[in-house]
Every structure is written in C-alpha cells, then in structure tokens.
Length: 192
Image 1 (cartoon, rainbow, N blue to C red):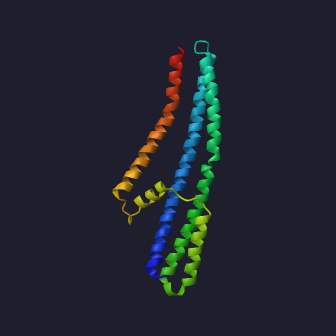
Image 2: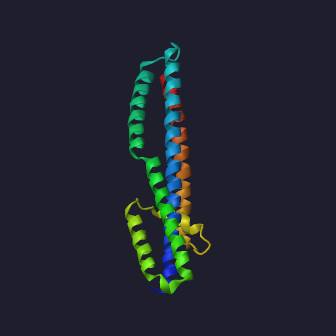
Image 3: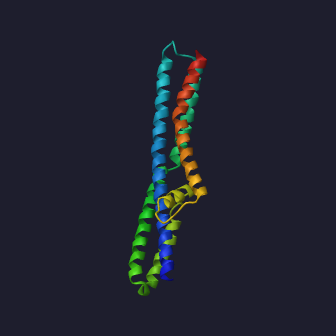
C-alpha cells in the first residue's frame, strides 16, 4: 500500500465515520419525535375523552372514533418501539468511536510509513470487521456528511436530493403535528 492509498483509505474511513454520526443523530431525533408524538396523540385522545363525558359534547360517533384512535395509537406505539431507534443509535455511536480509533492509528502510521505495513493491514481488517458489526448508514446521511466536508463538493443533483430530504421531513412533521387537530375538528364539526 502506498502513502496515497493510505490517505485515500483514511478519507474513506472518515466519511464512513461521519455518515455513521449523522445516522446516529437522525435515529436519536426519530426516537425523540416518536416519543413526543406518542405523548402528544395520547394527550389529545385523553382531552377528547374527557370532553366526551360532558352531555353537551357526548355522542356515540365521538366514543367510537376515540376507541378507534386509541387502538391505532397502541398499534403505532408498538411499531415505533419495535424500531429500536435508541438502541440502534447507541450501536452506531460505538461503531463510529471505534472508526475514530482506526483513523488515529492511520495518522500514526503515516509518520513512519515503511515500518508499519503489518499494522496497516491489521487496521484495514479492523475497519472491515467494524462494518459488519453495525447497520449501514443511508444515502441521506452520507450526503449530509459529504456536504459538511470541506474536501467534498456536492453536484447539483445531490444538493437537490438533500433539499428534497429536508423539505420532506419538515412537511411530514408538520402533517403529524396537525393531523390530530384536523381530525378532532372534523369529528366535532360533523357530530354537532
């Protein structure tokens, strides 16, 4: 392996590490959002249930709708819990810390390149073993990592993909927050 190949390999590990950091951050955010939305939806269902106790607002349609909403919330909560966002994030964090150790080793090897060929091979093997121990990052996390790198320039198509990704997330979150209010208003409007 030449010094240029070693530097290229170091760059590859750095991008993998940065992508895994982005994936870990995204999974932490998804964990927080899913917990927030579960509490948020539960609060709305409880408020509507309390409102349904008052004879002026009570109706069979609201009771049926609240029962269906409670069942849906339970199913969604079980699904979200099964996604293991937090655990997956912790696994990725462990992985990118180990990748950082390999980068540190490679930086040491570059100072005394000729005497470290066996150690370089060991580091390469460590890298490939680490790739097997964790889920892979997705293309969005990779593009985010590249966009934050001073060495990497995204082309127009990649920038468009990132913009789409961000807009999609904002629209989806807005929808998830507004959805229960719209449904609640429709229920109340059509019931009375």
